[in-house]
Each structure stands twice: as C-alpha cells, then as structure tokens.
Image 1 (tube, rainbow, N blue to C red):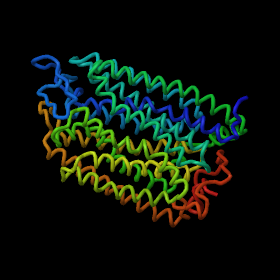
Image 2: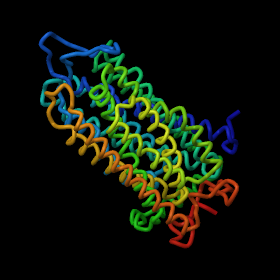
Image 3: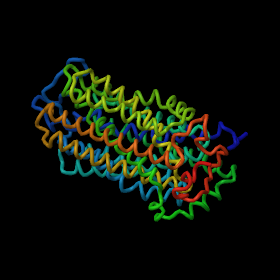
Image 4: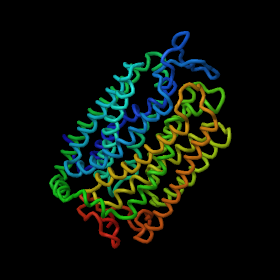
Length: 480
C-alpha cells in the first residue's frame, strides 16, 4: 500500500531523496581543494612524475600537474561563485513560477554536464584549451548546483514548515557535507592510484546519482502535493509572483542575507586553500594529512548539523545563535593568522560555528517570506552570498600571488589572507546584531522560543498564501 502523504513518514522519505540531490555535487565542488598541488603542479618534472607522499614527513621538489597559477586555481572557485550570483536569482524566480519538478530536473542535469566538461578539460593538459574548458565546466556546474540548492531548500521548507524545519535543514546540510567529507578523505588516495582524470570522472558519476535522486523526489513531491490537495493552490499563488516583488522584501530579510554572505565569505574561500595553507605554514604535514585537517570543517558540520537543528527547533532564538556563531568564529582566524596552534583545533572550531550558522541562518528565511515566493527569496540570498564568496576568492587569489614558480607561498601572504577572513567575520557580527535589533522592533519572530509564541505556523499549512510583505506591521506573512 502506498504511503499516505499526510503521514510523517512520507515527508521523511521525501527528505531522504532530497538530501541525496547534492551529495555528489558537494563531493565534486571541493575536489580542486584536495588536489590543489596537482592543479598548480608543473606540467613536467625533470625526473618524471612525482606525487606527494602520504607519510607524515614526506617532502618533494616537484609535483606534476596541470600547471595552473594560484590566481587561475582560485578562478575555478570564483567563476563558480559568480555564476551562482547571476543564475540563482533567475532560477529562484523560475522555480517559484514553474515549480519544484522543473527545477530539480534542469539543475541536476546541469551539474552532470558541468562536471563532465570539467573532467574532460583535464585531458587537455598543456594546451590552451585546458583552462577555458575547466572554467566552462565550473560555470555550468555552478549554474546547476547553486540553483539545485534553492529547489532543495524550497522542498524542505514545503514539507517541514511548522514541524521539524531546522532538523530537516540540518540533515540536508549533513548529507551535502558527507559528500565534502568523503572527498577530503578519499580523493587524494584515489588520485594517487588512478590519476587525476579518473578522479574527476568519478566525481561526475556521483553527480549522476544526484540526477537519479532528482527524478525520484520529483515524483514523490508531485504525488504528495496532489494527495494533500495543495498542488493547485501553490500553482495559483505562483502565478501571482512578480520579479518586481523583490523591492518589497523586508529589512530583516536583507540583514539576514548580509549576515549569511559575510559568514560564508570566511568559510568557503578558506576551505578552498586550507590544504595548501596547512602544508606551507605547519611543518610535517603531507598532502593527505593536510586534506584530512582541512576537511575537519565539514566533518564537524556533518556530525553536528542534525543535533544542532533539533536544538534550534526546540529552543528557537535563531537571531541570537547567528550573533553567537559569528562572534565565536573570530578566534579561529586569529589563531590561524598569528599562532602556530595545531590547525586541527581551528578547523574543528570553524566546523562547529559553521554548523550553528547554517542551522540558524538559512532556516530563518522561510520565517520572513511566504512559501509562494520562497524560491525567489532563496535565489536572491544565494546570489548575494555567492557575489561575496566570488569577490573573496578573487581577493584571496590576488593576496596569494599570481606565480606558480614558488613551491611554498610566503607566510606573510597567508597571514594577510587570514586578516581578510577576520574582517569578514567582524562584518558578519555587525550585520547579525543589526538583524536582531530590527527583528525585535518587528515582533521578534526570529528569537521566539518554544515556550513563548510559536516560532512557525502551528497549523503547518505549507501553502502559505500570505502576501509577499505585510509591510512593517506584520511578521512577513509566515508567522501566525
């Protein structure tokens, strides 16, 4: 007998396949981080191919790779971010207009195409086609993955609003970060055995898994909405959505978006270069060991995200958590910039604050905008976030230099990079404090507790048909 959509088990089945949407794409995203030495390695080595050893004290004089400069390498991340910044606004609007099923199919297909072209580009080593092909692959991959995350969040918000919303967001993040964690644990070993080209194609295969999950979640979402009798309601509300409605989004939403942007400006660009940083600054770390330590950011979030989600669902106080995790991130970059404390301390610490940030900031967006316009709001938030991350990647690339002739990047350059991360964290604290001030003046929606007024709509009606903004007199149309 088919599982009824009204039952709690149905939404968790939807959540399972929804989580698998981005497992493979998150694995692919940070493959360059693990293989940074190979991406920036020399096209040829005098005595043949040299791979970094996996021993604790292994050293080398030459790494054979694709011959990218630090600036070109960081451009792989920058173009991903910039593509997201442009595409996700339109993607969010289209998802609101055309529905979740359209979004998961198109955008998961783009991740497959993008990762395929990226892997194909590695076959053109030493030719002028290598960088354009790999950048094209990252462009398509970014177009799909950033937009796919919006659909994923929209599906999660639909099925869990008024229920276990932060838990669902936390589990979604956990599955995504599982892909990242497995990448940091196994990619370097896989590359040492099979080579870079097969490693990149393996990542593409995982994106195919995401495409299969997209087809499955499309069917589940369609069947469930029809059983609940909400398919037509959502479609009617979606027809009312206009791109001009962006101008009417509340101030709390924009402060929340800025808080997210400044926080992620410190996380993603750091992780992209963390493996190389650890090898350059701290003695005795092999490429594999450095990758493990860099991956601890995602290890921590993988372990903690679900528990943190449950905590925030129970306690509320999302705005307070946003300020707290931003303030507690300050010591991370200070330790990395000015001390030689073992880097594992800082990466685990960053992973913990990242878990609280993801579980408190992103699930707050559905609380200040209605369901019918959530895709547009999520798309715009992702766009602003990726503009910031893209700029940060370019700035980091400029700070670290443009020449690949130096085996080790000077420590003063790394210190400047960490100071830049500190500046972003301070900006995040300012934005999050401002968010709490404005939220308190407008009803304190984000900081409501379980013991006080309900944090979310208790009737759990996913078809939130409220207007885009009840202006300054209500709670954004998503809180009763």
